[in-house]
Amino acid sequence: MRIAIQGERGSNSHMAALEMLGAVEVVPCIVSADVIDAVLRGRVDAAVLPIENSLHGSVDEHYDLLLENPIRIDCESLMRVRHNLIAAPGVRLEAVRRVLSHPVALSQCRRYLAGMDDVQVLPFYDTAGSVKHIMAEGLRDTAGVAPVLAAEEYGAEILVAGIEDHAENYTRFHLLRRSQDPKPEGLAANKLSVAFSVEHRPGTLVAALQRLAEAGVDLTKIESRPVPGSPWEYVFYVDFRFDSAEKADAALLALVRECRMVKELGRYAAA
Image (cartoon, rainbow, N blue to C red; front, side):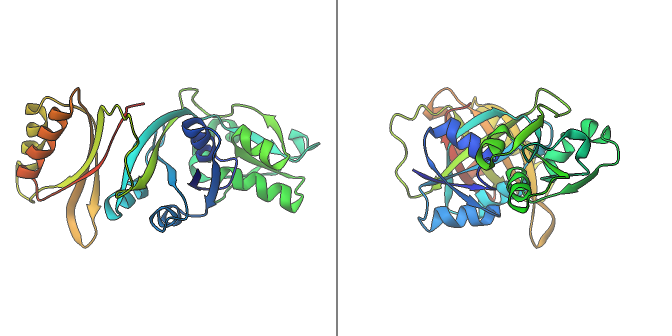
């Protein structure tokens, strides 16, 4: 399988793809919109994108991409995220004067990085990309914050392992395919993601959520995103668990009757 990811080989998304699917060919993309484009044009079989981190919160852009494009969620996984300080072989910790990484990774390692004296912390486009850059440029005064796989991919060394502020740091990833692609066989789905919008008047959101409760499903998350061009109007994204396909169908039908717009984003097995 060819799987598109946002970021370079050796990134957390690369690790998530391997955990989810085993041996696959990873196709790196610089931005998430390119990931989705690769899926829609058939250049890859599927994509793996993060949707939520237990410390940083939701990846808002990816919710927008789910709504805007004919793609669906087929699977989810939870991965423990560990951040490591990585440099070129032979570089000593005291020689490091700059640290590069994705801003989200840097924000999750604030305490450790704040304790590094005379070190400049700079944002970079990708965690693994920072290590790739360091090795390609032969930098001896710079380290990256990235997964262990990045060190293995680019021949770098881990200076300090596990520098994240909190050990309970998890990211939830989605496996995405085109909406028209055949669904995986033997899928034991018990979770559904859906986007909906309601009329902009009092009580409409409460009524929609009440319909879900009456359908007997278990709401596990709700997220809101602004509607472009319509100030103070929002699209709501919800995840809910169900114990039968009939209950899931009933919940969706109830939303359709109550809401202005409803889009099913995917049915899959909860991680």
